[in-house]
Length: 139
Image 1 (cartoon, rainbow, N blue to C red):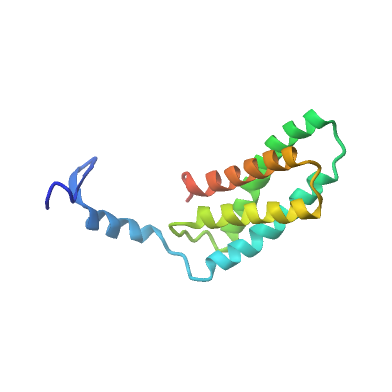
Image 2 (cartoon, rainbow, N blue to C red):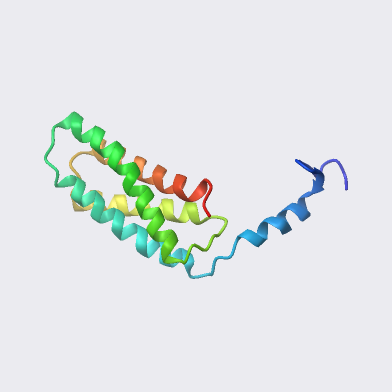
């Protein structure tokens, strides 16, 4: 093992191939999982964005509501998409669900969001919540 191929781990140096082979055990997704996750996440986010547009609140209060509710909505959508595929994991399922949430937010914008600023805050918080829920410490 050359110095370029070695990776320092808590138990010593190992080669990159050994580490990749050990990590592949954790990924058990099927080829249809991205389609299922997109079919779950995008429509749910479109409906959530449309419902945000129906709330007639003050301008500043709507921004605050969009931030906090968007994070919760994104995390909830990510949980539903993760459960829809029986909690199987892939290397990029966080990106697939995050992209589907972003796509759903665009569809919700077309359906009728209150303003571009509150829609932007809501969609950014929702995508961040979804990616964070699936990327960090998912079992």
